[in-house]
Image (cartoon, rainbow, N blue to C red; front, side):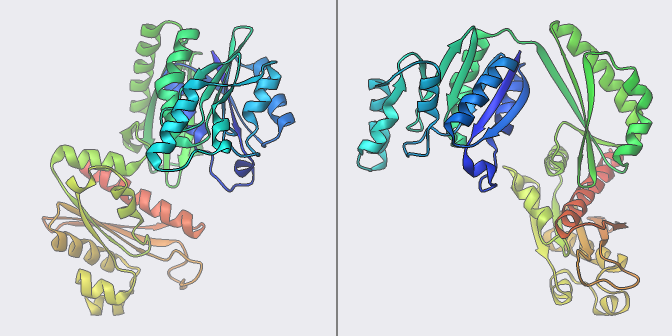
Length: 415
Protein backbone atom coordinates (compact mmCIF):
# COMPACT_ATOMS: atom_id res chain seq x y z
CA UNK A 1 0.00 0.00 0.00
CA UNK A 2 1.81 3.08 -1.29
CA UNK A 3 1.40 6.58 0.10
CA UNK A 4 2.72 9.78 -1.42
CA UNK A 5 3.33 12.84 0.75
CA UNK A 6 2.97 16.31 -0.78
CA UNK A 7 4.21 19.34 1.14
CA UNK A 8 2.95 22.72 -0.07
CA UNK A 9 4.67 26.03 0.62
CA UNK A 10 6.99 28.52 -1.04
CA UNK A 11 8.81 28.83 2.28
CA UNK A 12 9.87 25.18 2.02
CA UNK A 13 11.24 25.58 -1.50
CA UNK A 14 13.41 28.59 -0.68
CA UNK A 15 14.82 27.00 2.49
CA UNK A 16 13.19 29.48 4.85
CA UNK A 17 11.47 26.68 6.77
CA UNK A 18 12.78 23.14 7.28
CA UNK A 19 10.25 20.54 6.16
CA UNK A 20 9.92 18.40 9.28
CA UNK A 21 6.38 17.32 8.42
CA UNK A 22 7.38 14.79 5.78
CA UNK A 23 9.86 13.15 8.17
CA UNK A 24 7.41 12.71 11.03
CA UNK A 25 4.60 11.64 8.69
CA UNK A 26 6.78 9.02 7.00
CA UNK A 27 7.79 7.56 10.35
CA UNK A 28 4.21 7.38 11.61
CA UNK A 29 3.03 5.78 8.37
CA UNK A 30 5.85 3.26 8.29
CA UNK A 31 5.23 2.25 11.89
CA UNK A 32 1.69 1.29 10.89
CA UNK A 33 2.71 -0.70 7.81
CA UNK A 34 2.25 1.91 5.07
CA UNK A 35 4.94 2.32 2.43
CA UNK A 36 5.87 5.91 1.54
CA UNK A 37 6.94 5.71 -2.10
CA UNK A 38 7.45 9.42 -2.80
CA UNK A 39 7.75 12.79 -1.06
CA UNK A 40 7.14 15.95 -3.10
CA UNK A 41 7.43 19.63 -2.23
CA UNK A 42 5.56 22.13 -4.39
CA UNK A 43 4.82 25.85 -4.45
CA UNK A 44 1.69 27.69 -3.35
CA UNK A 45 0.43 27.57 -6.91
CA UNK A 46 -2.90 26.17 -8.08
CA UNK A 47 -1.51 24.55 -11.23
CA UNK A 48 1.39 22.98 -9.33
CA UNK A 49 -0.97 21.61 -6.66
CA UNK A 50 -3.42 20.16 -9.18
CA UNK A 51 -0.66 18.59 -11.27
CA UNK A 52 1.07 17.19 -8.21
CA UNK A 53 -2.08 15.57 -6.82
CA UNK A 54 -3.10 14.06 -10.19
CA UNK A 55 0.35 12.56 -10.71
CA UNK A 56 0.39 11.21 -7.16
CA UNK A 57 -2.96 9.50 -7.68
CA UNK A 58 -1.57 7.73 -10.72
CA UNK A 59 1.36 6.27 -8.77
CA UNK A 60 0.04 5.81 -5.23
CA UNK A 61 -2.96 4.41 -3.36
CA UNK A 62 -3.22 7.41 -1.05
CA UNK A 63 -2.06 11.05 -1.10
CA UNK A 64 -1.38 13.02 2.08
CA UNK A 65 -1.00 16.79 1.74
CA UNK A 66 0.18 19.36 4.26
CA UNK A 67 0.20 23.14 4.02
CA UNK A 68 -1.73 25.97 2.42
CA UNK A 69 -4.80 25.83 4.68
CA UNK A 70 -4.41 29.15 6.48
CA UNK A 71 -6.80 32.11 6.21
CA UNK A 72 -4.58 34.37 4.08
CA UNK A 73 -4.65 34.87 0.31
CA UNK A 74 -1.52 32.78 -0.34
CA UNK A 75 -3.18 29.71 1.23
CA UNK A 76 -4.97 28.16 -1.74
CA UNK A 77 -4.89 24.41 -1.12
CA UNK A 78 -8.52 24.14 -0.02
CA UNK A 79 -9.81 26.13 -2.99
CA UNK A 80 -7.69 24.19 -5.47
CA UNK A 81 -8.80 20.78 -4.16
CA UNK A 82 -12.45 21.83 -4.16
CA UNK A 83 -12.17 22.83 -7.83
CA UNK A 84 -10.31 19.62 -8.70
CA UNK A 85 -13.01 17.42 -7.21
CA UNK A 86 -15.90 19.51 -8.58
CA UNK A 87 -17.10 20.76 -5.21
CA UNK A 88 -18.25 24.09 -3.88
CA UNK A 89 -17.32 25.60 -0.54
CA UNK A 90 -19.85 25.75 2.28
CA UNK A 91 -19.59 26.94 5.85
CA UNK A 92 -19.40 24.10 8.34
CA UNK A 93 -21.17 24.92 11.62
CA UNK A 94 -18.95 22.42 13.44
CA UNK A 95 -15.74 23.93 12.16
CA UNK A 96 -17.00 27.47 12.80
CA UNK A 97 -17.80 26.57 16.39
CA UNK A 98 -14.25 25.22 16.84
CA UNK A 99 -12.68 28.34 15.32
CA UNK A 100 -14.78 30.66 17.50
CA UNK A 101 -13.92 28.61 20.58
CA UNK A 102 -10.18 28.81 19.90
CA UNK A 103 -10.27 32.58 19.36
CA UNK A 104 -12.31 33.04 22.52
CA UNK A 105 -9.83 30.99 24.58
CA UNK A 106 -6.93 33.04 23.20
CA UNK A 107 -8.73 36.31 23.86
CA UNK A 108 -8.67 37.40 20.20
CA UNK A 109 -11.58 38.94 18.27
CA UNK A 110 -13.11 36.81 15.52
CA UNK A 111 -12.62 38.38 12.08
CA UNK A 112 -14.18 37.69 8.69
CA UNK A 113 -10.82 36.50 7.43
CA UNK A 114 -10.64 33.86 10.14
CA UNK A 115 -14.27 32.92 9.60
CA UNK A 116 -13.18 31.65 6.16
CA UNK A 117 -11.47 28.79 7.97
CA UNK A 118 -14.93 27.27 8.42
CA UNK A 119 -15.41 26.98 4.64
CA UNK A 120 -15.03 23.37 3.47
CA UNK A 121 -15.72 21.55 0.17
CA UNK A 122 -19.27 20.24 0.30
CA UNK A 123 -18.36 16.67 -0.73
CA UNK A 124 -15.34 16.04 1.49
CA UNK A 125 -15.14 14.39 4.89
CA UNK A 126 -14.12 17.04 7.40
CA UNK A 127 -11.35 16.04 9.82
CA UNK A 128 -11.56 17.93 13.08
CA UNK A 129 -8.61 19.96 14.33
CA UNK A 130 -9.17 20.58 18.06
CA UNK A 131 -5.88 22.47 18.50
CA UNK A 132 -6.01 24.71 15.43
CA UNK A 133 -8.42 26.60 13.19
CA UNK A 134 -7.75 24.79 9.88
CA UNK A 135 -9.70 21.53 9.53
CA UNK A 136 -8.41 18.55 7.61
CA UNK A 137 -10.26 17.35 4.52
CA UNK A 138 -10.58 13.86 3.05
CA UNK A 139 -11.53 13.28 -0.59
CA UNK A 140 -12.14 9.90 -2.23
CA UNK A 141 -11.59 9.08 -5.90
CA UNK A 142 -11.79 5.56 -7.34
CA UNK A 143 -11.16 4.02 -3.94
CA UNK A 144 -8.12 6.22 -3.31
CA UNK A 145 -7.97 8.84 -0.55
CA UNK A 146 -6.59 12.35 -0.79
CA UNK A 147 -6.21 13.91 2.66
CA UNK A 148 -5.24 17.53 3.24
CA UNK A 149 -3.89 18.64 6.63
CA UNK A 150 -2.52 21.86 8.15
CA UNK A 151 1.16 22.61 7.68
CA UNK A 152 1.71 23.65 11.32
CA UNK A 153 3.75 20.67 12.61
CA UNK A 154 2.09 20.12 15.98
CA UNK A 155 -1.39 20.42 14.42
CA UNK A 156 -0.50 17.96 11.66
CA UNK A 157 1.05 15.47 14.09
CA UNK A 158 -2.00 15.52 16.34
CA UNK A 159 -4.33 15.08 13.37
CA UNK A 160 -2.25 12.22 11.98
CA UNK A 161 -2.16 10.31 15.25
CA UNK A 162 -5.71 10.89 16.41
CA UNK A 163 -7.69 10.92 13.15
CA UNK A 164 -5.84 10.24 9.91
CA UNK A 165 -4.02 7.02 10.80
CA UNK A 166 -7.18 5.35 12.18
CA UNK A 167 -9.00 6.42 9.01
CA UNK A 168 -6.29 4.94 6.79
CA UNK A 169 -6.18 1.66 8.73
CA UNK A 170 -9.93 1.36 8.34
CA UNK A 171 -9.79 2.02 4.59
CA UNK A 172 -6.68 0.08 3.53
CA UNK A 173 -5.11 -3.32 4.17
CA UNK A 174 -1.46 -2.94 5.12
CA UNK A 175 1.54 -5.26 5.02
CA UNK A 176 3.74 -6.18 7.93
CA UNK A 177 6.82 -3.93 8.11
CA UNK A 178 9.60 -4.41 10.64
CA UNK A 179 12.97 -2.72 11.10
CA UNK A 180 16.11 -3.44 13.11
CA UNK A 181 18.73 -0.71 13.34
CA UNK A 182 22.32 -1.36 14.38
CA UNK A 183 24.80 1.34 15.34
CA UNK A 184 28.39 0.73 14.29
CA UNK A 185 31.52 2.76 14.83
CA UNK A 186 35.14 2.45 13.83
CA UNK A 187 34.71 1.29 10.23
CA UNK A 188 33.88 3.22 7.06
CA UNK A 189 30.83 2.62 4.90
CA UNK A 190 32.68 1.13 1.92
CA UNK A 191 34.80 -1.16 4.13
CA UNK A 192 31.75 -2.42 5.98
CA UNK A 193 29.92 -2.97 2.68
CA UNK A 194 32.78 -5.18 1.50
CA UNK A 195 32.77 -7.06 4.78
CA UNK A 196 29.01 -7.72 4.52
CA UNK A 197 28.94 -8.63 0.82
CA UNK A 198 28.18 -12.34 1.41
CA UNK A 199 25.65 -11.54 4.12
CA UNK A 200 23.76 -9.17 1.81
CA UNK A 201 23.81 -11.70 -1.02
CA UNK A 202 22.16 -14.24 1.27
CA UNK A 203 19.28 -12.03 2.39
CA UNK A 204 15.74 -13.14 1.44
CA UNK A 205 14.10 -10.96 -1.22
CA UNK A 206 11.73 -9.39 1.32
CA UNK A 207 14.56 -8.12 3.56
CA UNK A 208 16.76 -5.17 2.60
CA UNK A 209 19.89 -3.72 4.20
CA UNK A 210 20.44 0.05 4.17
CA UNK A 211 23.56 2.04 5.14
CA UNK A 212 22.86 5.29 7.01
CA UNK A 213 26.07 7.25 7.68
CA UNK A 214 26.39 10.09 10.18
CA UNK A 215 29.53 11.92 11.32
CA UNK A 216 31.90 9.18 12.58
CA UNK A 217 29.00 6.74 13.08
CA UNK A 218 27.35 4.31 10.67
CA UNK A 219 23.87 2.90 11.17
CA UNK A 220 22.65 -0.25 9.43
CA UNK A 221 18.95 -0.84 9.01
CA UNK A 222 17.43 -4.20 8.19
CA UNK A 223 13.90 -3.77 6.81
CA UNK A 224 11.47 -6.61 6.17
CA UNK A 225 8.00 -6.46 4.68
CA UNK A 226 5.41 -9.00 3.65
CA UNK A 227 1.90 -10.31 4.18
CA UNK A 228 2.66 -13.00 6.77
CA UNK A 229 3.33 -11.10 10.01
CA UNK A 230 4.86 -14.00 11.95
CA UNK A 231 7.03 -15.26 9.08
CA UNK A 232 8.39 -11.79 8.32
CA UNK A 233 9.25 -11.07 11.95
CA UNK A 234 10.85 -14.47 12.55
CA UNK A 235 13.11 -14.20 9.51
CA UNK A 236 14.09 -10.64 10.37
CA UNK A 237 15.08 -11.78 13.86
CA UNK A 238 17.16 -14.57 12.31
CA UNK A 239 18.97 -12.22 9.91
CA UNK A 240 19.52 -9.68 12.69
CA UNK A 241 21.34 -12.30 14.75
CA UNK A 242 23.51 -13.22 11.75
CA UNK A 243 24.32 -9.56 11.11
CA UNK A 244 25.24 -9.02 14.74
CA UNK A 245 27.86 -11.77 14.47
CA UNK A 246 29.25 -10.23 11.28
CA UNK A 247 29.62 -6.80 12.89
CA UNK A 248 31.64 -8.06 15.83
CA UNK A 249 33.36 -5.29 17.80
CA UNK A 250 32.15 -2.60 15.40
CA UNK A 251 28.65 -2.93 16.90
CA UNK A 252 27.91 -0.53 19.76
CA UNK A 253 24.12 -0.53 20.12
CA UNK A 254 20.64 -1.06 18.72
CA UNK A 255 17.90 1.17 17.35
CA UNK A 256 18.73 4.65 18.58
CA UNK A 257 20.56 6.75 16.01
CA UNK A 258 21.29 9.24 18.78
CA UNK A 259 24.35 8.10 20.72
CA UNK A 260 23.43 10.36 23.62
CA UNK A 261 20.19 8.42 24.06
CA UNK A 262 22.02 5.10 23.95
CA UNK A 263 24.65 6.25 26.44
CA UNK A 264 22.05 7.70 28.79
CA UNK A 265 20.11 4.42 28.81
CA UNK A 266 23.25 2.46 29.66
CA UNK A 267 24.23 4.81 32.48
CA UNK A 268 20.69 4.83 33.88
CA UNK A 269 20.54 1.04 33.91
CA UNK A 270 23.86 0.90 35.79
CA UNK A 271 23.08 3.74 38.18
CA UNK A 272 26.15 5.66 36.99
CA UNK A 273 26.78 9.29 36.16
CA UNK A 274 28.66 11.50 33.73
CA UNK A 275 30.27 14.92 33.47
CA UNK A 276 31.91 16.58 30.45
CA UNK A 277 34.93 18.83 30.00
CA UNK A 278 34.87 20.35 26.53
CA UNK A 279 37.18 22.64 24.64
CA UNK A 280 36.97 22.19 20.85
CA UNK A 281 33.40 20.78 20.93
CA UNK A 282 32.22 23.90 22.74
CA UNK A 283 29.55 22.22 24.86
CA UNK A 284 28.04 20.15 22.04
CA UNK A 285 28.36 16.89 23.99
CA UNK A 286 26.53 18.46 26.93
CA UNK A 287 23.93 19.84 24.52
CA UNK A 288 23.22 16.42 23.00
CA UNK A 289 22.79 14.81 26.41
CA UNK A 290 20.66 17.56 27.94
CA UNK A 291 18.24 17.48 24.99
CA UNK A 292 16.91 14.28 26.57
CA UNK A 293 14.12 14.31 29.12
CA UNK A 294 15.38 12.97 32.45
CA UNK A 295 19.03 13.70 31.65
CA UNK A 296 19.55 14.99 35.20
CA UNK A 297 19.39 11.40 36.45
CA UNK A 298 22.72 10.58 34.83
CA UNK A 299 24.30 13.90 33.87
CA UNK A 300 25.82 16.23 36.46
CA UNK A 301 27.40 19.10 34.58
CA UNK A 302 29.97 20.47 32.19
CA UNK A 303 32.94 22.79 32.00
CA UNK A 304 33.45 24.42 28.61
CA UNK A 305 37.08 25.36 29.07
CA UNK A 306 37.87 27.03 25.77
CA UNK A 307 40.87 28.98 27.04
CA UNK A 308 43.98 27.73 28.78
CA UNK A 309 43.10 29.90 31.77
CA UNK A 310 39.75 28.10 32.12
CA UNK A 311 41.40 24.68 31.81
CA UNK A 312 43.74 25.55 34.64
CA UNK A 313 41.31 27.40 36.93
CA UNK A 314 38.23 25.19 36.53
CA UNK A 315 39.63 21.73 35.83
CA UNK A 316 43.01 21.80 37.55
CA UNK A 317 45.09 21.38 34.40
CA UNK A 318 48.67 22.15 35.39
CA UNK A 319 50.30 25.29 33.98
CA UNK A 320 53.52 23.41 33.26
CA UNK A 321 51.56 20.78 31.30
CA UNK A 322 49.99 23.44 29.10
CA UNK A 323 53.37 25.08 28.51
CA UNK A 324 55.23 21.86 27.79
CA UNK A 325 52.69 19.96 25.69
CA UNK A 326 50.18 22.57 24.55
CA UNK A 327 46.42 22.59 25.00
CA UNK A 328 45.88 20.00 22.26
CA UNK A 329 47.68 17.06 23.80
CA UNK A 330 47.13 13.74 25.51
CA UNK A 331 48.32 15.10 28.83
CA UNK A 332 45.88 18.04 28.85
CA UNK A 333 42.94 15.89 27.70
CA UNK A 334 43.62 13.44 30.54
CA UNK A 335 43.91 16.16 33.18
CA UNK A 336 40.69 17.74 31.92
CA UNK A 337 38.76 14.46 32.24
CA UNK A 338 40.22 13.65 35.67
CA UNK A 339 39.47 17.19 36.82
CA UNK A 340 35.83 16.90 35.71
CA UNK A 341 35.34 13.58 37.51
CA UNK A 342 36.63 15.13 40.70
CA UNK A 343 34.75 18.42 40.30
CA UNK A 344 31.35 16.83 39.68
CA UNK A 345 31.87 13.60 41.68
CA UNK A 346 30.70 11.37 38.82
CA UNK A 347 31.40 7.82 37.69
CA UNK A 348 32.83 9.01 34.37
CA UNK A 349 33.92 12.16 32.63
CA UNK A 350 34.85 12.75 29.00
CA UNK A 351 37.01 15.53 27.61
CA UNK A 352 37.85 16.98 24.21
CA UNK A 353 40.62 19.32 23.16
CA UNK A 354 41.49 19.97 19.54
CA UNK A 355 41.76 22.30 16.56
CA UNK A 356 38.42 22.78 14.79
CA UNK A 357 39.91 25.28 12.32
CA UNK A 358 40.21 26.88 9.95
CA UNK A 359 43.02 28.58 11.92
CA UNK A 360 45.13 27.53 14.89
CA UNK A 361 47.08 24.69 13.26
CA UNK A 362 50.78 23.97 13.68
CA UNK A 363 53.09 21.67 11.76
CA UNK A 364 52.65 18.92 14.35
CA UNK A 365 48.97 19.59 14.98
CA UNK A 366 47.01 20.20 11.77
CA UNK A 367 43.40 21.38 11.63
CA UNK A 368 41.17 18.48 12.60
CA UNK A 369 43.43 17.14 15.35
CA UNK A 370 41.55 16.22 18.52
CA UNK A 371 42.43 14.40 21.74
CA UNK A 372 39.62 12.62 23.57
CA UNK A 373 39.95 11.31 27.11
CA UNK A 374 37.69 9.28 29.38
CA UNK A 375 38.29 9.16 33.12
CA UNK A 376 36.54 7.21 35.86
CA UNK A 377 36.18 7.82 39.57
CA UNK A 378 38.91 5.27 40.33
CA UNK A 379 41.60 7.46 38.83
CA UNK A 380 41.93 5.59 35.53
CA UNK A 381 42.07 7.46 32.26
CA UNK A 382 42.02 6.48 28.58
CA UNK A 383 43.03 8.88 25.81
CA UNK A 384 43.08 8.70 22.02
CA UNK A 385 44.09 10.98 19.18
CA UNK A 386 42.00 11.51 16.06
CA UNK A 387 42.05 13.49 12.84
CA UNK A 388 38.70 14.81 11.60
CA UNK A 389 39.73 16.88 8.61
CA UNK A 390 36.51 18.52 7.45
CA UNK A 391 34.40 21.60 8.06
CA UNK A 392 34.26 23.13 11.53
CA UNK A 393 30.68 21.97 12.10
CA UNK A 394 31.41 18.46 10.86
CA UNK A 395 34.53 18.32 13.03
CA UNK A 396 32.48 19.14 16.14
CA UNK A 397 29.83 16.53 15.30
CA UNK A 398 32.40 13.84 14.54
CA UNK A 399 34.34 14.54 17.74
CA UNK A 400 31.09 14.47 19.73
CA UNK A 401 30.03 11.11 18.28
CA UNK A 402 33.50 9.64 18.74
CA UNK A 403 33.51 10.70 22.37
CA UNK A 404 30.07 9.24 23.10
CA UNK A 405 30.76 6.00 21.24
CA UNK A 406 34.09 5.49 23.01
CA UNK A 407 32.41 5.74 26.40
CA UNK A 408 29.68 3.32 25.28
CA UNK A 409 32.35 0.84 24.18
CA UNK A 410 34.28 1.22 27.42
CA UNK A 411 31.19 0.63 29.57
CA UNK A 412 29.95 -2.30 27.46
CA UNK A 413 33.35 -4.00 27.62
CA UNK A 414 33.25 -3.79 31.41
CA UNK A 415 29.90 -5.56 31.72
